[in-house]
Image (cartoon, rainbow, N blue to C red; front, side, top):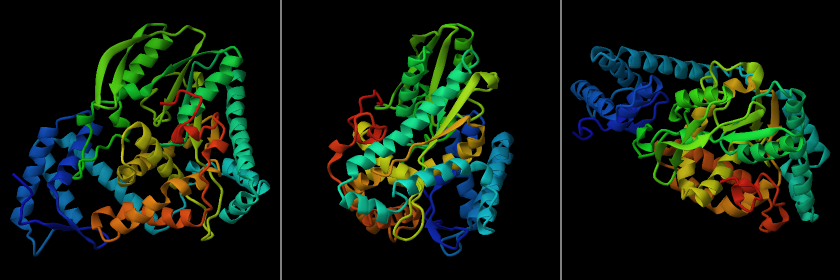
Length: 450
């Protein structure tokens, strides 16, 4: 059965008219099932067909349903078909999204607990002291031939943060068994983890890294949208139960067999690499969802030191507004994924709404649990990105301007294009030190980061 010709469009809450697709319904049901531990795609499709049948009997091309009406029918079908647990999660998620919309409309300021204001203030003071708190000042320094100095000054500030975190960890020597480096996508976690390991090793601490990337479920078990894009940003994309089990076994001195994930094929092989740690070793975990509670559930919190890294750039653009941190990370990931995962940068742009949704649900709410926060932004990345990506964003802005299914991609492309347009480009990347964590994305790092 294909998408019914009797149903071609659906009304969204904002009044826009978007194409109808059964795949969206199937994907929503599958997401709810995955959250509850289920991974039966065939069943999700079967339930979506049942929903579509009801929709076609009650709506038409001339009288399309509202999004809320589609969701009501999904809940009804899930309950009637004996999937009450999945229905409950679907209802709770729907309610949480509704609460977020209400909060946004009322311009709620209830997110203060998620924002590291003290750290942001420190970064702002540093930016002001170095004449890097606005695009205008950045351009002026570049015009004076200061780009190399900007790189050295920025990297020194970052290194200070990493060394400060290492010092705090050593002050708890004997208590800390796990060091977590967490943060949103492309914030610089991998290089930060390598640098932390180096500083801690110099202080005589034994370090063993547990690579969480190998715990991804097979790609075909991840939810897929109507464009064929997989959502692997959610914590449920990881085998959290196995991670938790292995960490507990390692802390108990047992040997475990680490799985191996192949990003090229999107498949995982179990029981591949033996791993065991000494009682004096510290387990290093670099993970997008390192602060997410289920990963280390049941482990003594006093034995875990949590580092959070974010691109806390404090620089105003030509429009007088601060440049968004997420836009920095979007550009970083475009370059990294193109070089190391064979992704077209356009794919990264159209996938980014998954990244942001996962961050808002599963990363930002846990910032307050971090023991130390590192600023992973460096002002000199903007001139480099201007040189590499500006023309791409110009093209994407035009491509998605009138596409109702790609509103998110269009708005991001437009915003980033406007921001990059005001920045002086720099093409000579040889001026960036090989030790820079920014090279995790553009290449040329002395660290093993891929």
